[in-house]
Length: 531
Image (cartoon, rainbow, N blue to C red; front, side, top):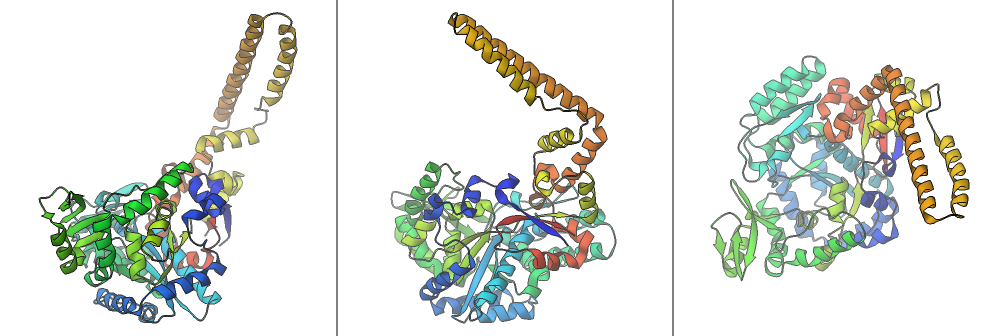
C-alpha cells in the first residue's frame, strides 16, 4: 500500500489561511494558542488539568453511560468512557453533522485522525490517557446539507419534511432510500455488509441521532471511539453560567467580532460572523434564534417572548432548550470535555481562529487546532493508468485544462511553446523604439500598438497549434480526462464528494484498518494512497 504526500498549498484546494497556518506564519499566531506539535501537548495538558473540575468529569461519565444505554460499545470504548472519570485522562475531539450514511469520505478521515492522534500521544506521554471523541452535531438544523450522499456519481437522497434539530428526526422514509441503495450496490460480500450497516442503522433505530451513533460505533468502536451527543440536559446544565453570560452581556459578539475583523484586515476570508446572541431556542420541531430587544427576549419567527427574569427562569429550569450556534458550540464542547485538541477541516479551523479572545474572556483554555488528514485514494488499476500516462501525483491536482495543456506540450512531437519567437520579436521592436525616440510620440505609440498586435497574433497561433495537437492526440487527452474525473468527481476533491461505500465495495473490512495504519495525523500534508 504505497503512499505519497503533497504540501497542502500545492494542491490548490486549500485557503491561504490554512496554508499560512500550517506554515506557522507569524502574523497568525495571535489567532491560536499552541500549534499542534507533539512537544506542545504537555503544556496543553497542564493548562487543561488545572481548569477542568472533577465534578464535570462525573457529569460527563454519567451522561455517556446513559447515551450508550441500549447500544453495544466495544471493550475499548467502555474502558475509554470509564477512564474519563480520572484526572489523568484527556480527550481529542472531532465533530461532524449527521450526514446520511456518513456523507462525504472525509467523515472517515476526521475520525481516523482523532484515533491516530490519541495513539501518538499515548506513546509520547504514557502516564496520561487519551480518548478519541466524535461529537455528533445533533442540534444542527441544516437538513438539506445532510439528507443525501453520493454513490457512483448518483445522488441518493432522503426526502422528508424539515424542521427542528436533525438529531430528533425519526427515520421514517429511509426504507425507500435503502431500496435504492441496495439496488445500486448489487450483490457480493462487501455489498451485503454495507446493506447490513444501512439497514441496522436506519431501519432499526428510531432517530437520526441513534442511527448515526450505531453506524459510527460499528465502523470505529474497536478503536475505542467515544460518541457524544451534546443535546443532553445534564451536560447543558454545566453550560448554564456561560449561556447566562451570553444572554445578559452578549459576550461572544463583543469578543469574536474584533477578532474576525483582524482576520479580514489581514486579507483572510472570515468564515462566520457572530450575532449579538449566539444561541437558539430548541424544542420539538423548533430551533430558532434568540433575539434581545430593549430588555425583552424573543424567539425568531415565533410568538415566544420573555422578560429578563423569565428568560433566566427558563434557562435554570430547562437548560436543554438552549442550543449554542456555531460560535458558541466550541465553547460548550470545551466546557464539558477535558479536551486538548480539536480536529477539523479548513473551514472549521477558520472559524475556530475567530474564538481565541472569547475563550480568554470566559476563562476556558483554548484547544489546539489540527487540520484533519486529507487523502486521495487510487486503486491499483488507476495507479497503473496514471503511470502509463506519465502523470505525477502533483499534476493530478491541476485544473483539467492545465493538466491537458501541460501533457500535450510534453508528448507533442513539435514545439508548441512560442517563447523564443516572442523574445525575438521583442528584441526587434527594441530597435524600433530607439528609432521612434528620434521622431515624435505618435510614431512611438504606433510602434507599441504594432508590437502588441504581433505578440497577440503569436499567442493566437500558439493556441491554435495547441488545439490542433489536442485533436491529433485525442486518445491521450481522453484517457487523461477520464482518470482525473474518476479521482476528482465534478472537478472536486474525492474526499468531499464520494461516499465511503464506493471504496468499501472495493476493499471491504480492510479499508479502515489500512487507513489507520498509513495516515499520520501530524504530518501536515495531503496523502495519496494506492491500495
